Amino acid sequence: LSKSRELELREEVASLRREKQEMQYNICLLEEDNQTLREELQQLQDGGDESQDFVMQQSFRSEEAQPRLTSR
Image (tube, rainbow, N blue to C red; front, side, top):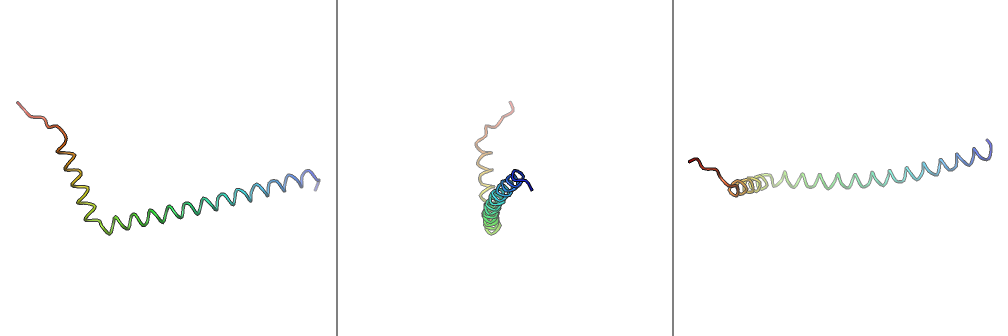
């Protein structure tokens, strides 16, 4: 191999190593986000009845707040 080609390949290897490191970091972030979402989902499922009651109450309140049309 020529010196210039060897230098190109070394730079490419270094670049690929940096890219691999970035991807591994991103994988860690995604795994953390995934775990957080799983925990939130579990909490929602555990308190499912309470959550549904809360959503229904909020829905009912928003319907009450809307002006109603009356027929004349």
